[in-house]
Image (cartoon, rainbow, N blue to C red; front, side, top):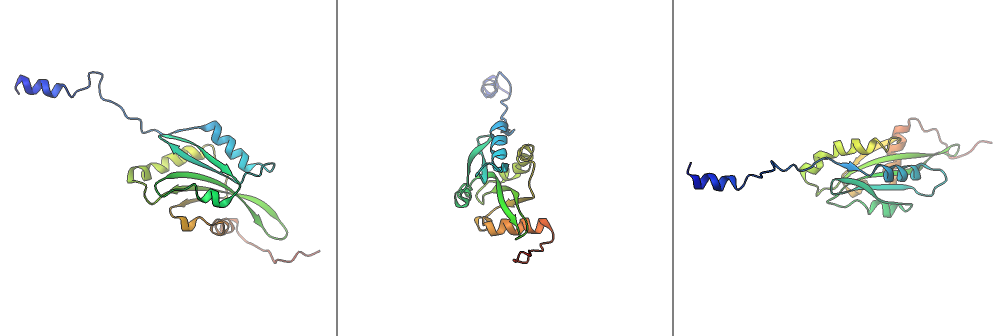
Length: 166
């Protein structure tokens, strides 16, 4: 190889070594735990929390009470997680149940789609208590009735009659 070609090739080599690009996902653990606790609290009106990516960091995007606002937080090209409180039960027993949602929008690329399993594990280290875990990939599934149906299936037998015996 001529000296000119060797010098030209060497100009592309970083003298500090290869650059490392961090693919690891970080999490704002304190803020996510606070939002999670807020949704779980019987003293709070908060019914949901959304956790989204800011670069390689998962943060609390929004918390709230309106389901339509919750649904609007999940965009076509986004990856996100949701934690939702739903009141379940029959005329004899009312109780709060929780749904953990993983959202992968239809426009999300293959690499980011593949990373969701490891990213979900990081979030589940904080968001640990839920009755149902769902992966949602289209807005048609974002209905309260769909989530209630999944919770009812997970809860086993439903004996409600609609009439309370006295």
